[in-house]
Structures are given as structure tokens and as C-alpha cells.
Length: 310
Ligand code: AMP
Ligand code: FE
Ligand code: FE
Ligand code: ZN
Image (cartoon, rainbow, N blue to C red; front, side, top):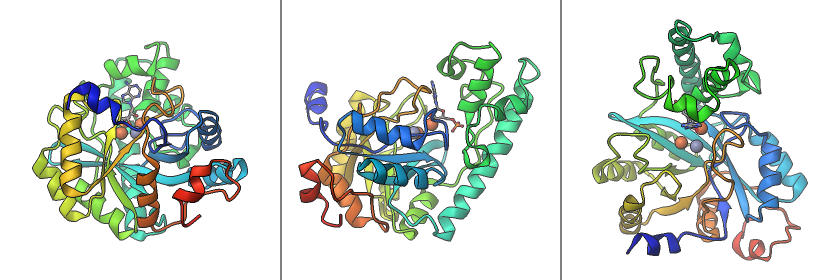
């Protein structure tokens, strides 16, 4: 298949299964996410903040009130040897002790790590820990990350935008950078499975995040632990890698998903720019431990046919 042919098989109608809100490094509330997804004409949307379930309640309330279909998920920070891995987890039991412990540990580690970065940055830039906290919208319910440090640097006038900060002082490999202590990707897949959820590797072939991508062997090791899918339709995946990902998905019977990685004003990614097919969402719902929000009076005819558990 050529690049064009691959682009042609990406879903043009469907769900956006990768979105961030103020409960991590997005700039908008879960309510705005649901409203904008509805306005954009999507079939449904998933909330997937980093290492937390804090936004699920607000997202579920908004989805019910607005009559719009919603899945709940999380983008889990993990690593496989030296490769940074983001693992999307959908429809798992948020009260599962193992996954809740994993998130608490990562969030504590993220705070320590962000403080360490700010200590280093403060030697050369006008930035304090309080300046970073001022950029955090939901207090301790928000998962802290480099974007909040970026916002503080923008506020201080050091950079014009978040993206500029990510190309500058806070980029991976800068002398101010400190990594986030993370569970292994194998642990993440096990924890998601134990919590009854569906695991999908986020942007598995994004060369801007890793010098080395996950190898076929590494992906197969995750499949052996219960990995369910690959996020093929994501702007970060290199075009020449998508066929490889589709081949792996086909030969192992994995789900193929897509999402925008929307962060509101925090990134240029447009809500709905990449989508997941309704049939794949149906699989996620069938396999997942918790009920999705699927409004009975939804005006989208596909829903009644596609969602038997509604
Ligand atoms: P962290 O997990 O704290 O290392 O921060 C990484 C997060 O920063 C990712 O999840 C992205 O959402 C965000 N990010 C990465 N690059 C950029 C960029 N160029 N502009 C805005 N946000 C970015
Ligand atoms: Fe993010
Ligand atoms: Fe990610
Ligand atoms: Zn993301």
C-alpha cells in the first residue's frame, strides 16, 4: 500500500479516543470536550487524561446531560527498556487497587520530577514552583507535567507558546530535563487487564518521542501480556510506519484505533482529526468492565445498531 492508500483507509466517521482536559495537560474542561465533540459531529468521544481518572465523573455527567456517547480512559505513562511508552486504557474499573496504586505512584513521582526540573530551571529562568502551581487548573486532582512548566515559562515571558518551550529548555535531553519515574509497559498492560480494561499503545511509532521505536518483538511481548490494540491513526505516527503497525495488528488480531490527542489550546491537534471506527468501539465496550455513556435518546441512528449494551 502507498501512503495515500493507507490514509484512505483511516476512518472518516467515528469516535475520537484520545483527548486531554484540565485534569492533566489539556486546557479545557471535560464538559467543553463533550460539547465540542458533539458540535464536531463525532459519533462519540473518550476522555484520556494522563495517569488519572479524576475527570471521568465530570465527563460522564456532561455526556449524560448533553446526550452524547462517551468512553472513559487514561493515558498511562510507562517505559519499555529505554523506550518511553504511552499506554491508553479504556473502560476499566477505576477502583481496581493495582491500577489506582500505579497512578498514585506515578503522580507522586511526577510532582517530585517537576519540582526537580523547576529547581534546575530556576537557576537560569525567572520561575518558581508556585508559578507552576498557578498553571494547574484542578489542584491536586490534576496530573502535573512538563506542559504546566511550559505554561509558567510562557507566563514569565521566556517563551511565546508551549510548543516553543518544548523545543527549548524543557525538551527531552536538555540539561533541565528530568524523566518521570514510570512503571514498565508490561506492568501497565497487566494492571489494565486486571482492572478489566482494554489496553492500546498510544502513538506507537512517533519518532519525535523516541530515538528508538518499540520493535516488533517488544510489541509482541506486550501482546503476550494481553495488549488489545494499537493507535495507528495519530498525527505523530510516521507515515512509513503505519503499514507496519497495520500488519502487526492484522496478524495478531489487535484493535486499530485513532485519536487526535486533543489538548485544547495546549497543542495544535484538532478534535476529531483522527478517529476510531464504530465497530472497534463496539469491541472495546464489549470487552470493557464498565458501562459506557450511551444515551437512549441519541439522535444518531448508528448507535442503536452498534451498541447492544446501551
Ligand atoms: P511529561 O509527560 O510531563 O513529560 O510531558 C509530556 C506531555 O507534554 C505530552 O503528553 C504532551 O501532551 C505534551 N507535549 C509534548 N510536546 C508538546 C508540544 N510541542 N507542545 C505542547 N505540548 C506538548
Ligand atoms: Fe499530554
Ligand atoms: Fe501521549
Ligand atoms: Zn495524549
